[in-house]
Amino acid sequence: MAGWISSKLKAAETLLHQASAALPPIDQQAAESLGKSSSASDLTALQQPSSSALLDAPAPRRPPPATPPPSLGLRIAARRHSQPPAPPPSAPRRSASAAADLSAQDQPGAEPAVAVEAKAEGDRRDREEAEKGGPSESGSGSGSGSDDDSDGSGSDDSEEERRREEERSRRRAERLAAMAARAIAEREEAVARLEGEKTSLEKLLAVREKEQAQEASELQTSMIETMEATEIEKQRHHSTRMEALVRLAELEVTNAELAKSLAREQWNLEVQVDQVAHLREEVDLKTFAQDKYKRKIAKIQKTSAPLVDEIESLRRLKLEDEIIDAEYTQTCDRIVSLKDKGFCPHIALRNNCSVL
Image (tube, rainbow, N blue to C red):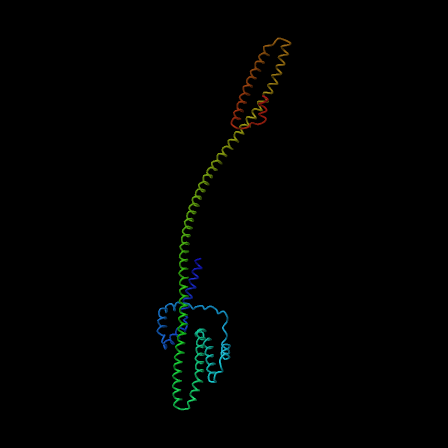
């Protein structure tokens, strides 16, 4: 939006500079023609307040005509058909004026087409008046038939010609003054319109700049807040990560210690299992021997009286059985304590305990 407004302002300034650089010569010609007429003071008073506006005013854009104007040849042919045949001396004059009109239109700094056409129209009217007045004056001069009358008619003709020339000059000056005033008014309107557009565009540009400054400040504030929040989250994440790393290290150390203790307890458990298996074998052997001795004692008791040696041997066997039972009970207690600590005993040890 700001770029578009700036481009519009630059275009308006360019038009103003072009208008001040290229002034049309119609105002100068109007001033020169009005200097000889009675309305020169009015045109000077009209031009003085708008001289600064003319310096800054762009060239007015005239609306295109609804239909293209006829060419100069067609206009001259139409005038010749509509008018009575002119005397021979007037034909070169008309062609000269037409050539002058064409050359004036072809020149880049010449008067506009409207001024040329108005001038041609004025010349045509003057010629018509001169042609109408010529035959009557010539007829009256020929009817008098005296030299004094011809001198008087010649002076009257010169006076009438001078009066008509002054009238033509006055009308031409008035037309040029009206055209100059219209051109000045159009350019003043164009300058006022451009000034209004420039003012509105400057206001829009100021409002847009203010809005952009406010948006930039809000964006900068939100960016700063976002950066601060991001920094806080980053620090929090870093602290949480460090805590997690410390906790992980502690857990790894604890896990290593527990693994070492587990391996040690498993080794002790395996040693105890081996000892229990060895004791189980001894208990089986002693149980087998005890059964053998019991059968032998029962056989002896049936056959003869008990001997002292046999009684003593039975006593020793009984004492050994008590010792074995005590050791077995102690081993079972140790196995139970190991179970309470969280270690599973071997299946063979469990079977041995159930058998015992």
